[in-house]
Every structure is written in structure tokens, then in C-alpha cells.
Image 1 (tube, rainbow, N blue to C red):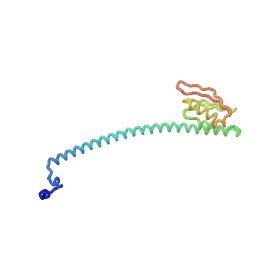
Image 2: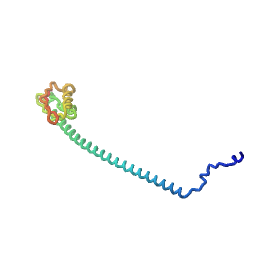
Image 3: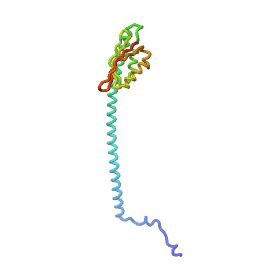
Image 4: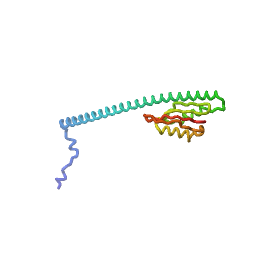
Length: 182
């Protein structure tokens, strides 16, 4: 039994052995191949992400251009509305104080005309009649406008509303004509 006990166990024996040159070069080759593969995957990922960013950048630029053109159109429309409101205000000042303030009526039409509805003409007579002609792009826009005139704020301004004509066009839009009494 004494002989069994005398045998020493050395756990560091594997580290004490000198490495052979072939093992190191094989390890170096495997490491270099792994590094090259990781580099290639990284390069592919970077190129893919760059192309994705370029595509998104083009889409955002297109959206910006569309919004800019819409904004310039709205600015033109707004300036014409202000000019028309100013001119009607000047006309109402020329008439006596007993006459109706037409700028208030115009403000009503500009404020409550929904999107998809375009007023083509407004004629105001001395008798207090207002004739309106316009085009609605769809029936819902026309219905919303009519509802605001009859049941909304227009109820306070107009004593009578007469629908002169309403016709559907081939493109699905509606031409209409109203007569309103103050």
C-alpha cells in the first residue's frame, strides 16, 4: 500500500510540455480564418445597413418634397382667402351700418367648408340673398357642409336655405348651387 501512496499526481503536467510548432501554426491558421470570416460578415452587415439607410433617406426626401409642395399650395390658398376677407371687410365698411357684415359670412364659409369641397362662386345681392356655387369631391363632404349650414353655426346666420341644384359628375364629384337668405 505504501507504493500506491507514493505516486504523485501532477495537474500542471500538460502545461509543462513544450508545444510543438505544428500545433501553434494550425491554431494560428484557424484563428486567421475565423477572423477573416468575422470581418466578411461585418463588412456585409455594414454594407447592407448603409444601403438600407440610403433607401430610407430617399423616401424621407421624397416625403419632404411632397409636404413642401402641399405647404406652398396651402399658403397660396390662405393668402387668397385673407385677401378676399379683407376686400369684403372693406366693402362692408362702404355700406351703411344697417347692412350685414359680409366678412362674418365669408369667414363662416372659409371656416366650415370641409376638405374636399371647393366654393366656385359667391354672389351677394342687395336683398340679402347669397348664391353659392361649388364642387364637392365626394358626397360626404357635401353632406357635412350642408349640415353645418342648416344645423350648425349657419342656423344663426341664414333664415332660409334653398338647394337650387345638385348633380353628380362622371368623375364622382358633385356640382351644387345654394341660395341662402339672411
